[in-house]
Structure formats: structure tokens, C-alpha cells
Length: 212
Image (cartoon, rainbow, N blue to C red; front, side, top):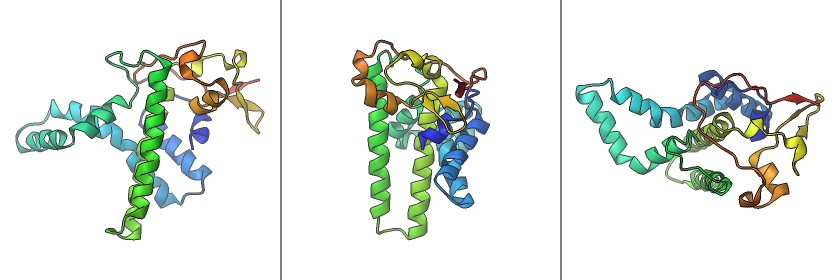
């Protein structure tokens, strides 16, 4: 799924780019239009569950504010994860490739586990299971999109690394994904370069596609 997303130009992944990236992924895998729209809804959720709720809480009053605060308190662990997985690195926690790798590995593992669990649920009908699966896919893709938008990954000169840019049928090329690079280069802790995150919206337009 991430391969389709990496072929898009990046402009900080504002709302349009998140929607378009999710749409490209759905199209690549033959999803119906309704399925893509549901996945787009899930794709919005990390923003609204994390930073947007913080923004809203500063402007709300009365019962609405109390309800939002209670929701945050009841879902504190998930909310903290939603904020952290934007790869904004606001507190400088991501200071090594190994920590990025841990996040990516956990994201992949947790997404796979969640999808498998939803697929096995017998307390909901098939339509509800499909909606839950699509929302989960969208939310997971948001975190992936934010890594490539908020880090300096696409700035690296991959031509001079073990994992070269990936050639496309169009004659253009794209940066390898994290896992594609890892498969060739091995332990991220031993890579000859260190990735950095902390860029915030909006980034200048940085084409992921590069002509060879």
C-alpha cells in the first residue's frame, strides 16, 4: 500500500494529500468507491483524535468541553499513541534509526493484529467488520504518510546507498520505503546515516518522484 503513496508529490500532507494518498492506495488494490471513502474517514482519525482535539479544547466551553475532556481521559493511551505517531518529534524522542524502526515495526504488527481481530469478530455483522477494517487501514496509513512527510527520508540520496531508488514503469523512480531499505541494509542502528523527524505542516513541495 505504501508503494502507491510514495509515488505522490508531497506538500506536507495537508488534508488533500492525506485523502489523495489513501485514494491512490484504494485504487491500486481495487477498492470500491465506498470502501475508499470509509478508509479516508479512518485516515482523518489520527488528526482529530490527537492534535485537532487539543486545538478544539482551547476553544470549547461548557458541556462540549467536558465531554471532549472525558473522552480524552477514557482513551488516554490510544490518544497519546495517536499524537506520537505523527512523527512530529516535538519532544525530540526519535533520536535514532532504531527508534524509528521500533515504531514502524509496532505499527505494522498492531495493524495486522487489529485487522485479524476485526475479521474474526462474531458479535458484529459482516458490514460492520468491513467498516472497522477499512477505518483501521486508513488510520495506519496516516501514520505512514506522516513519516515520509515529517521526516527527511525523501531528501536522502539513495543512489549512493545499498538500496537504490525504485524504478517505475513510467521511466521515473521513487525513494525506497523504510522496509525496502531495511531489507537490503539490515539493522537500522548500523546504517551510515540517521533519519530525522520534526518537520511540521506545511512542507514546501518536495517531489518524491525523481527522473533518472
